Image (cartoon, rainbow, N blue to C red; front, top):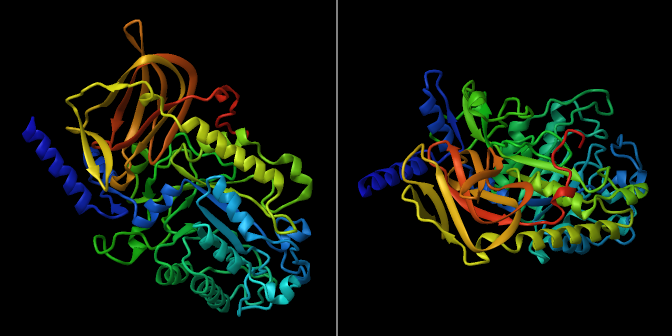
Length: 509
């Protein structure tokens, strides 16, 4: 047995060193075993891993639209409209941090083209506004507040510009690169650059052919640790703006443009172009889907939603702010489905987060803390039954459970001195070494018979599943199916009285 364990440990080490990149090519001749092994070998880059660990990030939609009541300005609005009278970026960051948000992304330029920093590329910017007599710089203020409160910062820069006269020509690509250079060099460390895919007409009626590769190159040069989302190579859009992810969410997905990555496989560890393929289908990474792919890439999902019906602030939506319980349901179905939640909080015309938004955000954090503050598996002296097929490994101080051999079920059986109530299971994979779990179950022992009370497919960084409340003192968590060996680093059972009031993931959202 020791010899087998040593050989398996060597094999795992081999996988983790040789295939230390976030993409891999597939061959039409690959067997099922070779396909699965290749899928298991794809891993996140350091920036992707650090991004996933944030769990909750924040969007701040703020600009001309805040003062016109529009969602999409047309680029003809006067800069004189922009005049927040009580703007306080410290307030934004303080509230965000108190609610558990780890990064704030500012809409430094939306589709209307109005820039919230004093750019040298256009007059359509804060320089022409009455805010601080044209001497203001919202991006600078936010960057300083983020530094003060130890908050990460991101920038949203819309490639679509409905004001720029050069839009629709190569001159615009140059202008946009210069805008990127300004926001990426003058404000300290930037942790995320966010592009959407909007590409409408400019003021001259033309559409722009965006030079994405050159945009990515600027970012990689100036802010190499920043993730590029969602029209970029690091992070993809989950496909809706509801805050709800898929029940089966793979971070390892097919790509059909590895040949355009320009650098031969093995000479780099990351994709430098946006992976091409249908990333909005219900099934993005099962064995059936990846079997037809040209290659695989680590391309995790960002799940975005606004705390209000609109993305920009509208006073008539004050009664429609998402409740703490609604936000909890969204958390379960975004972060709890292997995604990162990007939650938008739009400031008012005064330049503040509204008191209703603040209250609901803080109560949402209190709900999460009350639920996940106590892992029920360890409150009553629970014991983990010994299993000869299970071993524990360590990496960077983290404890990781896996199996001795491939194609074995990984079983965690716990017995407690006292019965407890539970209706939530949380699992996590050590995704630094890949995403592998394909099926799991939670079982309880009743009358000497194991009964399954919850099931799931993918786990990824974090998976949360709710189920009808049960009372038990003997549970078994089984990883039923995995690509090669699974690596589990988070196991927990929890309880929330309001689980039956949560809406769950339905198409109506």
